[in-house]
Image 1 (cartoon, rainbow, N blue to C red):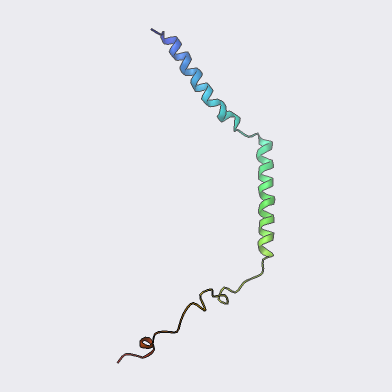
Image 2: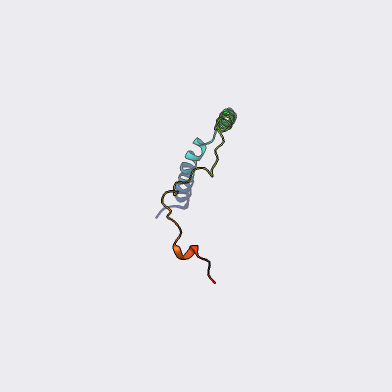
Length: 80
């Protein structure tokens, strides 16, 4: 039978091994600042490229224009 100390040590070891990947993902302050600066530059470039796109008139283009037939004859006549 295992002693309680061995069980406690094994549990602490298992918990500490599971915390190692979390510590590896932590970023330093310099990395955080560099990433924020990169995101800011990317955002500025995106906004500049959006402003370079010419305005489009959405009402001009109708892809279903030639697919619609004339209205049925019954629909053209008003009902009395």
